[in-house]
Picture 1 (cartoon, rainbow, N blue to C red):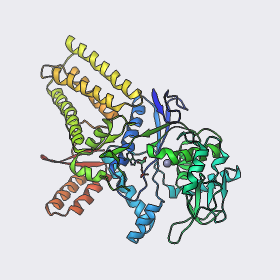
Picture 2: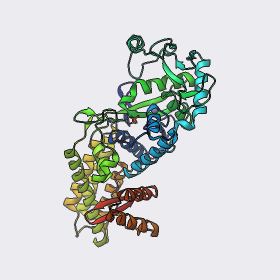
Picture 3: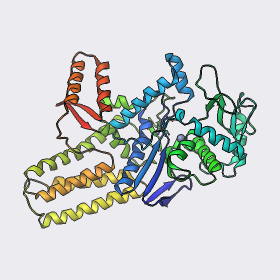
Picture 4: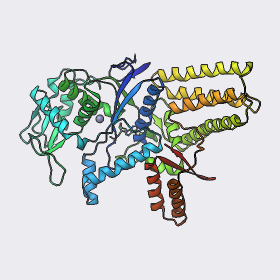
Length: 469
Ligand code: AMP
Ligand code: ZN
């Protein structure tokens, strides 16, 4: 399997550290707001990477953090007159609901920075003991970038350029730095902010140290894949490598995967620019499967521009696949018992060729755009060859193939036939009532409750549809 490694800037053959197992760490969101669809891109892309490994029989240990101590969270907490914990807890819950609605699997572990302070203090002390970090007079601890010759290897930056570049942006308050390129591991508390005791000062961690620590704790000193958006290459991932490799004395991640940006009007969608749509907003207009399908319609390393037209195209494309799967399901109930005939057997050869095409696309650095083309070809074949005269074996084989390949992409095709449990039914009823009463806050609340129970709702012209996540 070929994977583009940002570290070497080449496509490489993937060799896992432990045969049959993939250890994967994906940097997660800072939780001070509802996530926007830019944040959803790495979630969907790397969830699909995970699903493909699982499809090929690997066990995947998938760790993705929530950054729950940060200036923006503290600012929001102050604005609302609550503590930082209240803000982060709220948005972690909301993020998990969005993930479920996008059919992003929960990680094996979702660690939170505030729960991992002990490990951070240990790693920082270890770095100080080895001469890779130092405490300034005010108790701030910095990583000494000049102590490590490999600094810059991921972002392909030259340390000398970095040091001189930083000279100009060295700001007051960082006088304790030995070199401008050094970065913060621990910083002193400020009035009104959450803090923890440490040997250097009461304070809180810098951002980068949390991922080095969580990755070590849940996956070990070495991992196969470390992933995130391309804005994380520098400084976040560069600094993680420095911390982890210096503390653990071994190489950190074998492969670095970075998704390109989701843009809007060809500018990065971001909270700070204010040019974003939240996943929640999009869910009011579309089934989030459409968003997922849209994200996978481009290669993850290509920029993707968000537009209503492209979303409509994704909606139509997805509908074509789902309609075909439904049609095959219906044919299954009426089809002739018995073996496939000669023409069907020839078509099934073609199906197997299309599965190979799908897998080859995925094995070429997860080219989901080409993988989707193979699914469309399969749909075309099914639409033109399966009808009421087909054998059951044939229609079942076709449908299973579509369901399986869509499953790898995290797209659900199954028409749910299960009956609703009593309490789910009552909640849906209550939500309908709330909507009739124009009590949309309550309706949303109920939708959230159902989500937590693993039920996603979809409002269609024919009424409310639901599915299990
Ligand atoms: P943040 O909450 O900003 O730290 O972002 C969480 C994750 O979303 C990181 O992996 C970012 O790189 C990624 N991300 C943020 N904005 C975008 C965007 N517009 N397109 C793609 N990825 C993004
Ligand atoms: Zn990180």
